[in-house]
Length: 136
Length: 232
Image (tube, rainbow over all chains, first blue to last red; front, side):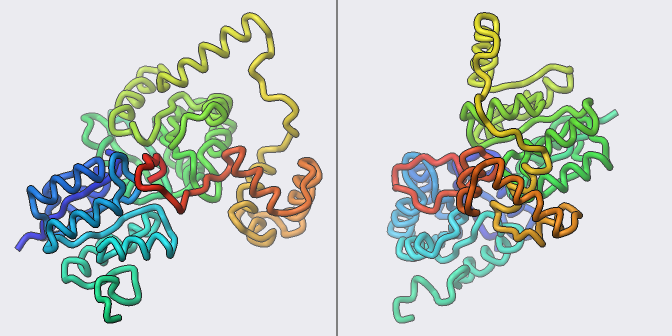
């Protein structure tokens, strides 16, 4: 079955790059794109993707707020944060917002495919323990 | 014959985005990709592309220093710089370095094809804000001669700029020597000369100088929910 992915980033050139990297993987399909957090929330509700690849620094609504709403509205959609913010505090906030995976943009070449694979199996990526399993 | 383009950006996802955008244009091809400024200089010399696209904020050697090095080697290179900001100082340095195109990363999907087309026709391509600055500078020169020049900045050599970037990125003198293919003693001499010329007493002063003068760029680690950052 095809893994359906929604990509959200405010830079069109980054969306194009993500689409190209993800679309090259067999069995994965980028079903749509969003250019801000609010659009990501709307499109997630309409399209119910398996995975939302979400930037943090976006206009109108940040990726963290969008993540909270996506997870609340569509718990079946997993969120993978892809961001330039390489900080433990931001990772913690992303985990609190409901993200399952966290990839720093500078490590995308190494981590993106593995992160999407892990997230698609509802496994954490980027954290030592699952941020969504509060018994950890 | 196809137009051959070299693309340099340290982020894989941005490079991929740039390459797919440009490859989709009939008659253009990506002849090479580079992951930092030093790699870009080496590949441009080896591949002799028709157009070079350089990100400004790259490690080891930033895009502006790479522009200067390439044009010093061969004035015929046609270079477009990509930046996350069109702050006055970055624009001024890009123009001084000899870039013929200036495109904001946030607008790259819209402007980059037009920029490459312009350079292909031996024209220049700038954002509206750069055009305003160029015009203002022209008018200022017409009235006041040297108005608009940056005053009182210490004169550093191109090599010293390279050393500043590497030191500000956290490299030791030994590592600087290794990257630049120098002896450790020569790297240390460059370091002392820089500190003396700039009147600095600590590496912290040097890092602040490098940030303030866009020699290195620092990513933000804290954002507010309403922030519309251009850095991602």
